[in-house]
Image (cartoon, rainbow, N blue to C red; front, side):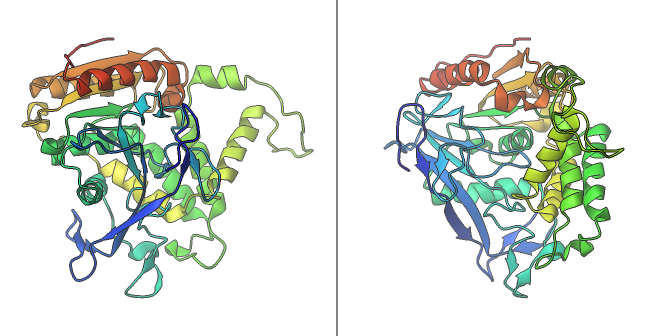
Amino acid sequence: METTNEGNAGIISTQYFTFAQPPDEMKLENGETLGPVTLAYETYGNLNKERSNAILIVHALSGDAHVAGINRENGDPGWWNTMVGPGKAFDTGKYFVVCSNVIGGCRGSTGPSSINPKTGRNYGLNFPLITIGDMVNAQKRLIDYLGIKKLLTVAGGSMGGMQVLQWMVSYPEMIRSAMPIAITLKHSPQQIAFNEVGRQAIIADPNWKQGDYYGGPPPVTGLALARMVGHITYMSDQSMEEKFGRRFRSERVKNKFAQDFEVEGYLQNRGTHFVKRFDANSYLYVTKAMDFFDASNGKPLAETFKGLKAKVMVIAFKSDWLYPAYQSREIVRACKMAGLEVTYCEVDSTYGHDAFLLETEELTHLIGYFLEKLFRGEVTAEYEI
């Protein structure tokens, strides 16, 4: 990593960690095996001598390992560039930050678009179903490889929040704190329904071909539609009104069903750009993993985080209707029933679910303060609504 100036995480190169080489393959939660497994990851800042300043940031559905700085290969800024860097919430002048692309993804980590060593062809639907637990188990291998015994915190929003909760359940001894942001203990029927609409849009695309489209035209129409549906849920009614209203596009095509309104053009643009960087099969696999996720694993809330000693900060947003705040309060209740020190912050934002990416000033204050107190051993539980 090269730091260029204050506040900028610098020029970043993606790194790759490969493990679970045959015959010692990674055993998945469904009993199947996978190997070799490669994780794309990036690091920021420096690990201190005590190895006590390491932070793992985990990404949402469409994210990747490139959380901050400028990617050396393509010049793109990180997806949480406003939050990670010198002097920012996750201050890389103080902390060593790690972010990896999940397994099942398509941004450098092993997923359905990867080559199956047994066939020499892309996995496609021969890739096994994976879970949030599998993603976290792979991350744990990476953290072990980096020589980190205990993380100062693990933090993430949306699907990243699911991974945070899974860390709290699977590896409680390895984390000093946890920050699940804008997420739930498990998907509601409505949340599953939105994901299913996206999956069916992809499956209905004639170019999907039962997942065996590699080498030919990909199902871009279905994937773009899935992204458009998803993007609607990321915003709020107020943020759409403020951003678009009922304004017409400046350039209108003479077609009965053209994108006349600005909001229509915006969604079309989001879908078009998404298909250039994401794999349709990964969308199917990762959304399915989200739907199957259940942090409580069918147990009473009081037992969900039993044995965890970590400090927890749960953050929600008032206008988030994809993961409404009451679901975050259920996480808080589970933590309290397990006897944990938990801070709850409900941010008054109009951005909807996207607030975890956009409310930079508020999140910087909350997260920066929490980490600073934690690093000095001064965190106390609070409950704020």
